[in-house]
Length: 459
Image (cartoon, rainbow, N blue to C red; front, top):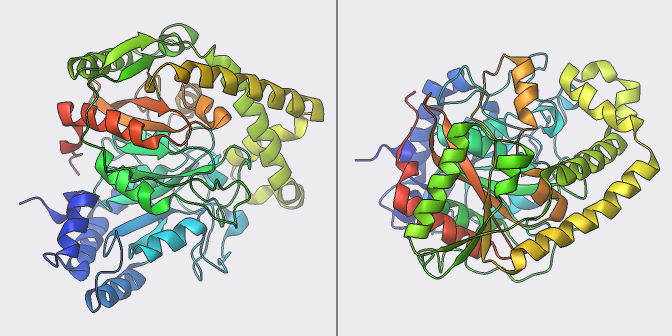
């Protein structure tokens, strides 16, 4: 039998709905897994074990209430839960208790999920893996000496390690897709406005996204069905119909036209050989499944990266300016250095970046116009040692995730095997606005042909 902690979200949800598995039994199994494994990973800022047990018992005593009935999940600790501290992994907000649930928290609660706790993040989703904060940084379950990616570090590490089948992360320059890539799981940054950001600590209002992180494509699609939809409390929320992301999931890619952005990982920012080989192999697999592969060129990667960096720094500074002036010592060194960078930008810098953003978005839309989805690199190399700060800093910007925060198009990080050292490899599948369903369909065809989610870290 599959150990309960390795059940996929879909498997667990089916067993819970049929009463073949109780919410209490499943919750206790995951709490036992957390007790055994989390000391090696530091995925949690706050474990809410008693709350989870009470919730599971209440669900077992009543009717099936929602799509996630009895399914435990974790939340990155910049997402509000009423009555629970939201710290953003920072002494600045230590003891800050949320007054009400975030929009995504409400949706997960309405779907009858079971919150296990709040998860580690880089400080305010920007600070990097820091060792001078009130809580330690999360570690990679495939090798605990390695970085799990960020900033949704605890979410990625915990899902990959079997601590919970679902976690939420946030993504402003790749912070769902980076830990998904480093930890060998699936992470979705949906279309800008698709998922509410109400009640989530902001980093960059115009580029922040919330996204699900799971071990399989089906699980991710199920989670996005719960999370997606209009929320009047988020000014950027899109009032667009939400389809069933699972309805066509097994449709395959035969007849699908898939674009490949080679220039980003071959010319603009050459990827490590094992990452290039993984992308080439993914294309061969998809072509073998019946897809047509064509080359597309949305323009230089650096154009998108510069725009993302300037807008993010400017908007983040505007959010943190007062705290940074009043109590800079409360921040960790990395968080403080990255946030203060925005103070040196001018209004002209910001406005020029906004104009360039429009050009980047048009180029990306043009590249997507002739294909069903496109494939590109995610990280340019596998995870490095977490305590090697120069290497963390060197590799952190070696990625191709920022373009989709700039343009708002949906993008999914997909596991693509392992390096010779046993660390996860990955790539991205991106698509047209509000067409996450086609991305999931292509990702599922690749996943089905390769079986990467069947491999788990040995902890």
